[in-house]
Length: 243
Image (tube, rainbow, N blue to C red; front, side):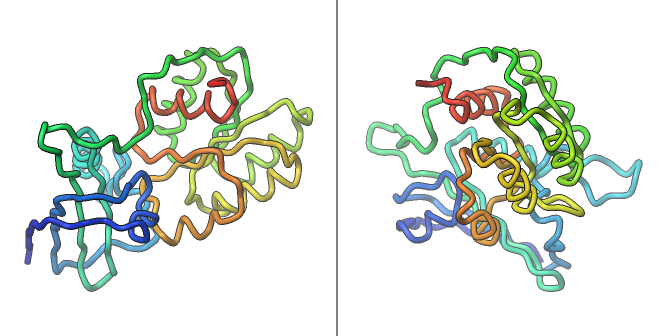
């Protein structure tokens, strides 16, 4: 059974901390829920990624939720997933209520800043989805950065360990990966170089993922799917190129 409801809500400080990019204020909350089989915990952070799908090969691509995510973000909105295997799934979508002039309060950092090209800085990109890895690599290289790519945390640590200390100032890592997850990878990299800057990317940031990153001094978060502009602005901020 599918249920759709809408209501006005106010997000307080406490609730806002559990949704990346949320600010306290008035929102319209659209809730879409079903009584289906639910989404396994291990893939919940990937459901908004382009081309991720649970369908068998040749049965279609997973663009649906990625498109929904893009539409919600383009309207300044937020989306939160709640799902328990065997009990169904619920999506809560929050759209900020416009003021009397029809202007929505700013929800995200100013993206009108000038993008500053890289100057050959080496960036370690860690991503187990090959399509996402390739796109991120191409965007960075086209904008003046040198990229070292790894498909898992262990490979990333090996690359970093064999590089000259201080030659890789920034790593961009996926949060959930097989064998060695994001937090474990970050800790291993920081043991080798405590000064390395870290950007974490994920299809879904929730309370559990936030807790796993506590105390790791993350320089930035990228929610997938992200645009080239969002990626480049986050990179230059992490590298201190904004100042």
